[in-house]
Length: 311
Image (cartoon, rainbow, N blue to C red; front, side, top):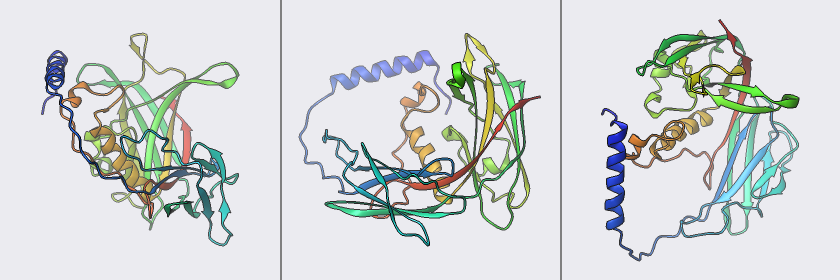
């Protein structure tokens, strides 16, 4: 379906708003109580200590905080005794330790009146980037705006199933090395067979998530187009540019794919949202969870970041 012209989309949206306002009627209904379960979220990586957020499922009419500050959270590592994470308040629990690459970890949250919630995942080993660079400009899009090209090459480990996430961004620095502006590039890799097989392009994902199913044990090249950040009416690269290659667990892979579809269906496609999409919202999509006895995700990744040289 072709996108509507913006003036027409605005007119339709205004008309729908008027119709909705004139047809509002209040009704009373006994809504079912939400399940009394905990929500546990943690993204584990070797560059950060263990951090876990614990919250609870609430109804739309419950005005109290969802964050759970009276839980007990335990970290289980094979061959070691359980470690209780420190309560930092506002639902945040931390450990002074960092996960190791290749390690399997279990997080368990307990709270009075709630069933215990636990999840296990492994932090994969980081995969080095063999070569990466960008060129700009290298072409134009359908609106005749300039595009660049980013190239990333790495060697996929053989005889094992691997999952990856690639993103690229630009940033500038202020005084004392402070980052004061950072902007992710939207990468378009529709010419790459491994990315096409994922079927994610129509959901405008913020990063590229894929498996090694089509290149297991081989050298891999990603060649993607991108549009740089607009500054003062011009498109250009500001500051420095970087590319991130994450080795991700299977649970992380499933979580990111479900998140892209959920985010798209919210009508927030792309930076600032898409007005045309707001007129044709998709059906709700179920978010992936690997937490037993509750909701949320406990997933792992290891990251390699390289400076993007210009060619």
